[in-house]
Image 1 (cartoon, rainbow, N blue to C red):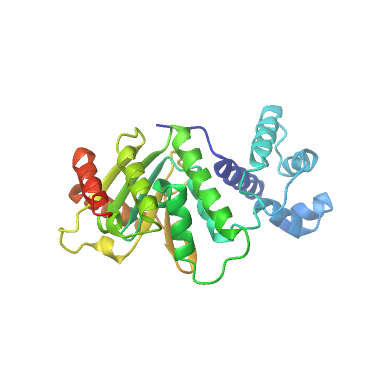
Image 2: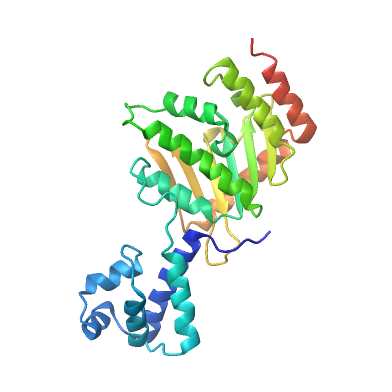
Length: 287
């Protein structure tokens, strides 16, 4: 399934193409800045996506790079407009920078693989479960509005991904997570009902890793791998811990190692009706 480029892909592609054009022109940042009468930092900030570029400025840059073909200029102008579009998480003061980086990386993914040995992965959580786990796992007192913002962002991520109809999700959940009480009894019953229903979702492959299996590398901790249909974007590996989200880019060997691990977990996991039986068995223990 191939979807249209997402917001972050447009931004990365624009920055990449603009820098490539400068390098192909043989001109340094200082030379381009001198020609346009700009400070060199302005060129660097534009290439890093730290500041917007107006259509007039872009045309001037392209002229400095020797790009005068009307079709090429128009294509870059269109890409610049797409790259400058506001995204819902832009300038959200409640969302940590590391979390925004995760959302940005996830937004363009074509395939999302998520393993969690402790609790239900975020993209499969109900709002009540997400609220309870966010409160329970925060080490310090959260500023006013922080919990609500994090939960709202998680629900928005789910909505965007599950309505895109072009994203494949492989969710690998340790069976222990089905029994770990998060929030009230009602919250857990609702969460397990939701999880059982997702087994029939066209975009989701859900596997429950049985408690009976022997030790495996997944016990080292949770991970997420994001894969893209855009060949310019290499897979991204994400980790989550008490220090927040960590997004690892440009390490294809690491991504492949975790994809290999995910395939191993999928082979030993319970899927379809057997997974549903496992979920219902856990639900039956809630008094």
